Image (cartoon, rainbow, N blue to C red; front, side):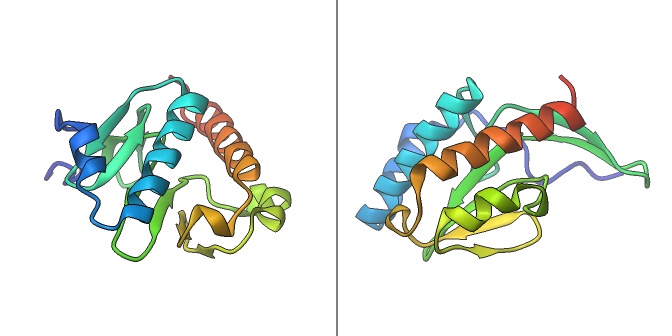
Length: 139
């Protein structure tokens, strides 16, 4: 069975964040990184070429496929920050209702700017997601 394409690397996180071309997106990425590091208590690692992740968990699907990934993370893309929250959003509806202007995918929250959201609510969402991940995927 082939391994996962997205693996933790030893790439320099500060260099990665400094390389984000748009100054506003770079500042937002640094702010989200600091928030995720604070709430997770974990240092950031670069997973693959473009995902900044905090903490690790082991997963195993019913198919037998297994791997390791960051408990929470994000990627500063060209137009948005993409925040990866594996547990989804339905369980966090009360927070989502107060968060602000975002787009949602199955496990991705797309954020154009931190100015569009309530940062305190975002931090509460990260804490709730980490609680879910610790419960679902104990260390």
